[in-house]
Length: 174
Length: 337
Ligand SMILES: Cc1cc2nc3c(=O)[nH]c(=O)nc-3n(C[C@H](O)[C@H](O)[C@H](O)COP(=O)(O)OP(=O)(O)OC[C@H]3O[C@@H](n4cnc5c(N)ncnc54)[C@H](O)[C@@H]3O)c2cc1C
Ligand code: SF4
Ligand code: FES
Ligand code: FES
Image (spheres, helix red, strand yellow):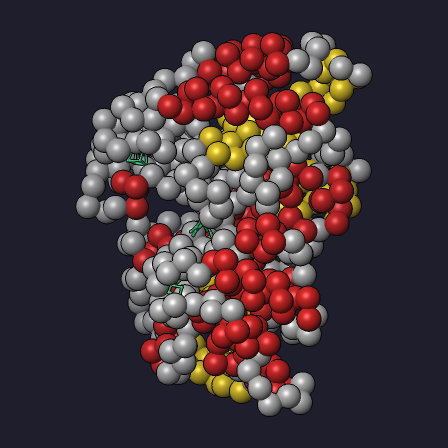
């Protein structure tokens, strides 16, 4: 058994290690803490949004080891050892490559007016980076389909697809 | 969410032991269904057994087919080169479901065991025989637009929501499980159950058992197949009706036919009589209509889901046409050809 929170009834916290936006953190968490709540409530990383808390909107999308998932439907303890990137860390991905700027997808969102209220945007951005890391979606139809897990109430969809297309064709997304 | 104990075993034996005979313990894999249900208090586990570190995340060659570990994610499976080439029906069905984020997290085993999306099942303020045996079924005579038209009982009319499972039914996959009594194999058709008078049991998995793998037989129907999913919006929505169709043809004559429906019953719906009817017949619309009529002869509408019968009839015909023509439904361009 790798981990055991203790005998039934006497539930304690569990020690985990996460690398969040490049910073290694040792944390004690209660097992029922979702990754989303850990980020927002404990670590003050409030860029990641809680829309529905049920996997239905994508506002909580973050990258776990480079893969996009809904942070509302995963427990922080289950990600022990993982590398987490949130919207606050996207520029850092670019800076690691020696550039002092926003991530290209962030620049492209600004360029293309790919948001109005901005509530869905952190999730859209992380999802876009995840999509490019995956490398499967190429055509406009495929991008639209692969971004369907991110709902935008303001309806900025067309401009979001434009932004992703542009960065994908620059080919310098991480 | 209620409070619970958390353990993270490293072997299957440890996981099975940790579950033991504790009715309040649950395995957790992707968590995309279980955590959702826990947030609604539909599930209140006393102990969660995190199985994500078990060595069950491989796809291996086996007897001319493939063995898919229970922890292979839905995304890994859908994009695996062997699956795309030899079992494109399965890849398409997976990509028709949920969202990219959810597919990245969701596991093969968890997908089989995901629970119904019946509104009342999720709402603890209403009676539901599946959630609380004996309390009644709120969907019968209630809001049942998404509910079943085949294989229902007076106790439950819920559907199984998975897309992947519809393809696995058509491909005649086999579920490999391990438990306190040892290992056993369950043919896909016998894995999920009809509600009968025990709707709280979705599957024939015994208490204490864990899914370790899904086996795909050699035959993948890569030449003639389709997964056609009809839903309220074009993506990120559960099926109202879906069809997995797979054919082998000799010229224009059907040699073998497999057909499974999603969104219409408590399990992926197969009708082997209809498959037998297709065999040896010309691959024409008339033949396909006859099969659809046979399947839907026993269909029973609820108060607000009668539209599903005609929708299913047309989806079956169109699905078989797509399969016969070798033009499977695209999962990104949603136009139905
Ligand atoms: C908004 C939304 C939309 C969705 N849309 C679709 C859709 O269109 N089509 C579709 O098919 N699905 C859809 N899904 C469902 C999704 O596919 C499932 O939630 C997912 O497949 C479950 O897998 P998991 O690994 O996350 O399961 P978990 O949540 O980890 O587990 C589910 C159940 O399986 C049990 N379990 C898990 N692994 C094992 C194992 N190896 N052995 C024994 N028991 C096990 C758990 O104890 C639990 O009871 C959607 C989900 C959401 C939230
Ligand atoms: S259809 Fe089944 S799941 Fe839905 S309320 Fe009735 S018993 Fe519960
Ligand atoms: S908050 Fe996670 S998907 Fe909506
Ligand atoms: S910009 Fe407002 S929800 Fe997307």
